Every structure is written in C-alpha cells, then in structure tokens.
Length: 437
Image (tube, rainbow, N blue to C red):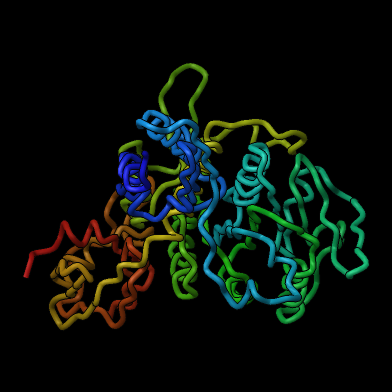
C-alpha cells in the first residue's frame, strides 16, 4: 500500500528553479490524502500566475501515477496565503479582495511607464486572470489616451463606489475619466485625497492582480500610495538615459524606505533593430554586454526594444514576446519576494573602510576610497560613452560614509562626506572589491 512518505519522497524530485529547493521542503505540497490507491494533494505555488505552475502539476502527476499501488492522482493547484496587513484588513477599502497589488513606477516621466503598466496588465488578463489597472497620475493621466477612452462616463454604485471601465477583460480606472480634458489644478492635500479615493473607493471586486500606474516623482502622492496600500511589490521602468537613471536611484531608495519589495527593472526603449541588419542599436548608450543589473544589483525583468506597437492606442490585446517575458519574470520575482526573507548585512564604517557582515557569517571589508570610486551612477559615469567622470585624483583623501542603508538582498545605499548621495552599490560589486577579514 502506498504511503505518504513515498509520495513526498517522489515529489522531492521537483525542484523550484527560483529557490533551487524541492517543493516538499518549501512547503508547497499540502493535504496529502490516500484512499484505496487514490491519491490527492495540493500544490500551493507562490502566486496565482506562477509561470511554472503547469510544469509542477505535470511532473507531479507523472511521478505519482508511476508509483506502485497508485490508481488515480488528483492534484489541486492553489496559492500560498498572503501575509495579513493592516491595510488589507480595512473593511472600508475595496482593495481587500485583491490578491496582489503591484506598483509600476519610473520616478521620471517620458520613459513609457504607463504603456508598460498597461501591457503587463493586459497580458495577465489575456491569460485568463482577473486583473485591474489604476492610473494614479492626477496631473497627467495617460491611461484614457492609451486605451482611446476619452470622454467616457463613470458611474457610481449604490455603495458610492466608482464602477471601473472594462476592456479586454481588464478593469480600468483613471482620474482622467473623471476630469475629462480639463487640467487638474489642485494642491497637495487635495491630490492625496483624490488618490486615496480612486484606489479605495473603486468597485474592484475580486482581482488576482491590480497594477498601479504610479505618477512620476517621489513626493507626497507616491508616499501616500506606498503607506496606504499593501503593495506586494514594485516594478521600475526606465531607459538608459542619464536623467532616467538618476531618478531610478531615487525610486529605489523611496521603496526601500517604506519596505516595498522591488521586483526588478524593465528597461524600456532599450534598443532598436533596423530593417537591414539584426544588430541591436542602443540609442541611450551601453551595449548588450552591459546591464542595469551591474548598476543597481536588481534583476532585469525585460529589455523592451522600440516597437511600433507601443506607439499606437490599445484597441486589442495582442501577445508580445517582450511583455510575455516581463510578465513571467515579474511573477517569478513576486513569488520569490513572498518567501525569501531579507538577508540584510550589518554595516559599519570607520575613517578608512566599510564593513559588511551577513547573517550567514559572510563578511566583506572594502576601502572607502575603492568603494566611492566604484560608483556607477549617472553622475559618476557617462551613459553614452561609458567614460568614468569621477576621477581618482578628485576623491577626497578622507572620503568616508556619513550614513548607509541596506537595500534588500541586492545592494547598499551610501551618503558620502563629499555630498554624494545617489550611488547604489550592489553586493556583487562589494564582494569583488572586498578583502576578507
């Protein structure tokens, strides 16, 4: 007779590619039941749109049905429960039935953030998930124009909740629907009030994912959203342009300060391929060998080229290989962030060195001079040419941090005594510079 031990032993052969551990030790296998050779169990993945969900199910069926004594196998695919938060327990918020809320941010306008947010939401809706998209840019809403939804009428339910527009199986809400073509002339407190209303008083119903198209910047509105909504994570959209990358650093520091996991970076308008060759032309500088991961330590979810599709209004949901890649990687990163704990190092510094010690005992020691010289921010390195603008002879003899901040599992931020504050130093860079104590 088949036993639960034999079933679990077989299922240990399924390895999650993101955690490099088997699904049994990760706690994904639950509710194992055996009756007269009929085996049933649940596999709980990290997020409902997990890209390897079908693969797990197929492998598990094949492994178990080939065990001696097994007649039938029934597998239920579920998701691990979310962590409860005060914001989700708010009985007045219409967000309480939204499983995951993802902010799409750029901190700088003009990088295609709204277009990317729209296509990420559309791709998940195309796959059959319940998805919403909310445009929180009060002063420059883009979603109405993107979806060709100008001059639409928004209705209010009996519960005094906005009823979102539905297109392509996607629920859409924007302050632009309420404003029409009139400019939004209002001050900070009124803006934050409207943002909260459009988030918490829209009739979202049950959603698997809600994407928040964040306004550019790191001011009151952005902080209102991060502090009043239980964000599951944030995606940062950028180009390689110098001004964009300066703002990326600011955005990273903002999300880290309010404990929002950063899922990764989507590099938009990364390159173009002309009609006469297959070469990638990087219009904002860099090359295929250079990656923003080296700059910030964050995963690159996708490099999206210049495409005619992204210059037109959205009248239908069309599969796009770059967006599909971005969605798959975003979902995998979302799943990892829900399980992996931050492995923050202890950081201290003196007049000559900066020291890091991780919970697993790993230590790193880097001279302040070498660490400051390694800065790859847009102020210290020319984006187009790659020329190092920070010259070694210009570094203060007594250069030292004045403050440090660990940034998730990928980098640290440092304020230096020469006034430089925008540098982000990936752990992989620090390890290369380090001499072990």
